[in-house]
Length: 97
Image (cartoon, rainbow, N blue to C red):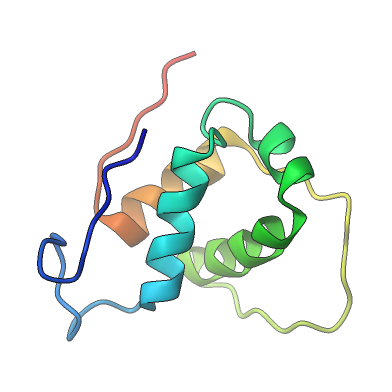
């Protein structure tokens, strides 16, 4: 289970963090919800989180995100979650399968 963080305990500061607090909380929720073990099962149960996660993933990868058309059949990989957790939370997360 993920460790709860608050601004005063985070290992990043508000001033130099490109991510919103809502994005940080979303990633914490996704990790705690089991998406690391099975991303597609987690996002099937939490479709609103999937859409939000894809937006954060695009931000992490430096891809401009413009919500024009919703694509429902996107598979999220464990590597995508690792990348976002590492970037947004500043935690070096490695999942060994």
